[in-house]
Amino acid sequence: MTHEPVIDRSTRWPYADGELGEFSYSRFDHPTGVAAERALGSLDGGQALLFASGMAAATAAVLGLAKPGRTIALGEGCYYGTTKLFELLAPWGVRFVQFDQAGPPPDGADLVWIEIPGNPLLTVPDLEAAAAHPAPVVCDTTAATPVLCRPLEHGVDVVLHSVTKYLGGHHDTLLGALVCRDAERYAALRAVRMQTGAIASPDAAWLLLRSLKTLELRVLRQSESALELARRLAAHPRVVRVRYPGLGPDPLAARYMHGGFGGLLSFDVADADAARRVETSTRLIANATSLGGVDTTIEGRFRWEGDRIPPGLLRLSVGIEDVEALWADLEQALAKA
Ligand code: PLP
Image 1 (cartoon, helix red, strand yellow):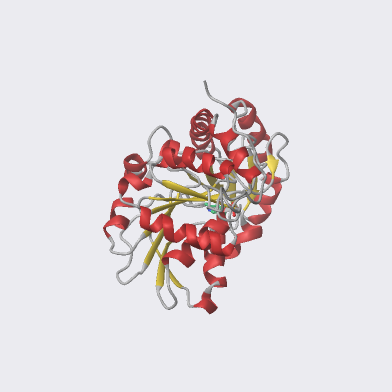
Image 2 (cartoon, rainbow, N blue to C red; image 1 turned 90 degrees about the horizontal axis):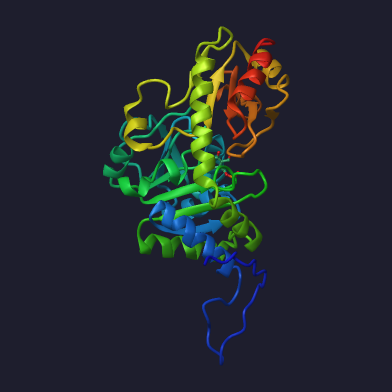
């Protein structure tokens, strides 16, 4: 019989006869977090650490895996916030260069950072080429989730998740995770988490445990609907371009993603004005940021990413609603493009 996990909100647990027990202070570890880490670790095939957000996890990965003056090679078109984090850390000696993640990382890089698939350009990295590089490799697997891709099995050292997205899945918890292939890196990153106080709360960890029960169902449904919508969008006269790994022949997507290509896609309309008209015309689909929830969201990325991306790029995170209802909503909104 399985038991519902209990949320233990204690911040300290008494010593036993003066000796440290499994738990002592909740900045180090807490029972709800450890239960959620075990569940996530078994999905990814490694040892998981939960953080207060995806960016808290990313910060810990930089502090634990890079050093001042060393260079991070970041996949082009990966999550915008990651580039902003690296820029923020420049005064502490973090340098980064960008590279086409479909090929090998540049020589001389000290840390490789890739994303499967990249948000919002949906490129797929060559995991084996990255693993063949001598530097440690971090793979942000937020958009694929362990349901569709397990990068640790392809030689990646650390998987990063914004658990806020698909793993959480309901737009109701901010949470991040690192999952490590080897015990030494796990211990180093756990020490960073402990000393920086970046651990997730017991409530957030409990919400992850709740969400994992439906993860596979949700992600498979989202992937199926996203593929259908990507195909229909590609044939729409107002759509200039669709980005989705399942659309064209993408040998890397076929090699590393199994069971579907995820619920995230992006498409371009003529310009930023047309993108704004589309995003403000949807009725069922929420015009909001973030992704990965059961409710579909759309947003023009121009407001965040400036000229890094085409001005008419709309990012669509497909939820679990009826796909015909989603298409009807997109069609009526696209009529205004
Ligand atoms: N990685 C990816 C791919 C993301 O999309 C995001 C957030 O949008 C993050 C990391 C950061 O996660 P969080 O917002 O949970 O800090």
